[in-house]
Length: 441
Image (cartoon, rainbow, N blue to C red; front, side, top):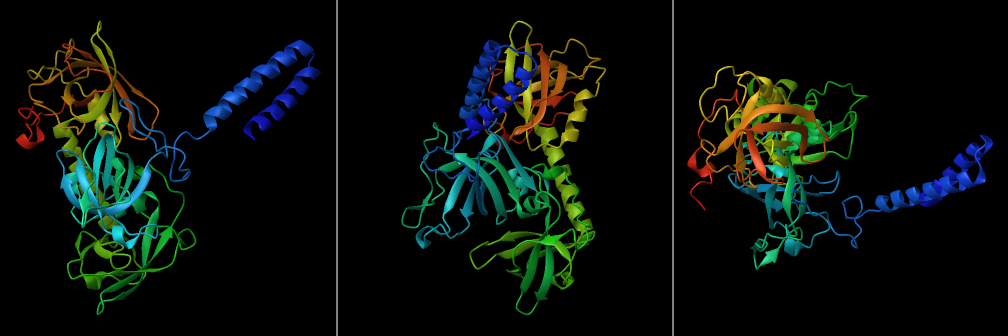
């Protein structure tokens, strides 16, 4: 159909050109060229991999490639509860939510996920690290199949049963319920609270359009009743005596939950005994803004102490210039620090071999796939930042790229390899030993 439509358009254009005095020979050449262009575009338009929106089982799932960000919409969506974390290796186990596609024999089985180097994590509506998320939190994840070089067997539990999602292991994005619904511009309306039976009835409301850039949205949902429209039927959640209630500047109690309030919730035990238990609930804008502001500061401190992660796109050996694109899941205000001038050298390796201490500069530490560095105090070189520019905002990419003129090129500065960048304005703090790979080889 695409090629037919192209031919129709070619015919219309040819007719118009014909009226303008073009010769039949020129028109024939133009039509032939346009036909082959349309055919080539049509071939490219054919799906080459399977997606959740196109569940054609004859197509393979997209497999991430080194040094290349994945296409939009290519990941598989999986929900589950966080049950185990190795934050230094950026690995986690989730218990998969039950759904109608599963047989009872494979309910509640675990899945091992490893974050891709550019995989992003969000908690309370802001960028996060795995150690920020409490065990038991219900998560939304987007995943790709197991990497070809990952020979670890799938997790087998309870009579060696394996999750039907076991072929997926590489994770590109994680969100808690708070972050997921905020990004979707959704919020719960409390309909009824029964403290005797500890039941909470709520309806999901939605206002406006959703966006994958939800972390940049305002967390306030002060829309009118006509702007916030119900989606789906009311759900009945369980409350417990330990449910964390946030209200205003501090903690509330179960008695603080009232019908009519608009709330965000983080759930646990989802699908085990119904929609789930309320793990945490934020009852108003103030409490949500405080939660997000606290998480944002935790993220900023985490990155300042560990460096901004990215990978190397190119290396000019002759000029000793390294081009780096930074990953997604970063607070964009951190990049403002790249332009801060440190006029006096603060000592090696802060300058990293910079040729001009009156220009922006920084250092690059080689990192592993898990973003763990080796010995960043000593194993980082760099120099002046020659260029900072915007690049396409693909999944996994921050859209920010820099070029660094290095005094010395390290062995790990190769295209496709992972690095962390430390602008000169950031005070270096040695990390705990468990977060350094030096000495484990």
